[in-house]
Length: 157
Length: 157
Image (cartoon, rainbow over all chains, first blue to last red; front, side, top):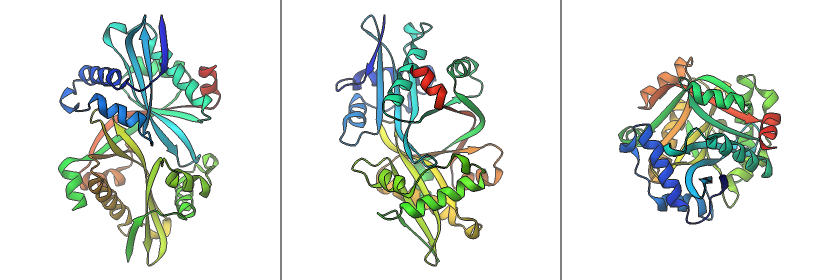
């Protein structure tokens, strides 16, 4: 009943929808200003920044995985940084998150990409449990730093 | 005495050198397999994955900043993810790290990029102090997850 495929032109709307749902469930809708066209451009420009998978359940949009095309300065190779793994609320608890992770791994192996990385909050035991089960190494103790808005402009001035 | 410029073709060697020094000072040389050519390709392919700045002190290589071209799925815009900020040991404590961060901010503003993000270990008070001083928001409580090697292949199988 689950089907997963690489995003194709026209999927910007689906990715916008799942990412918006993610922002909503994290209570961050105020920060969500992306448009479907933004996703189309990031995926299908001549120099794509991201890649994505779309999961459907009996043909209905159920979830997506979005990764950054990344680079390991230690390995000197392209890697994948998983930005969002989103399963729409009505489709949760059906193994769709895990199925998406498995397809991400398949994409990595098929493209000769040596690793996939992502972040998880340390209090999120459920997610951590899934990531441990699929064999991920989990290293706690990181802070996420962000410079934007007025602070970014002030530093650049 | 400090001069900072965008990386240009031929700088792969300098980036290799500073990143290798970073791996060495973190006791991770065993994981460092990148070559100067890897950096050239990631920077100057038709679809570059990274960007970089090179800092010199009286003409000598002193440090580098390397960022991933990234994408915020909430903003729908290209962003910068700072992968490595490296100052070679003989050049530390001269403000080169801060000067590199300032130039990174200038690159962001000049390219209409809304934000720069990076990670820091929560025990690294010195780095955190600098990041706070330049106006970064610092959010603790993240775990870094990595899937690679046999575990990646097993999930993909």
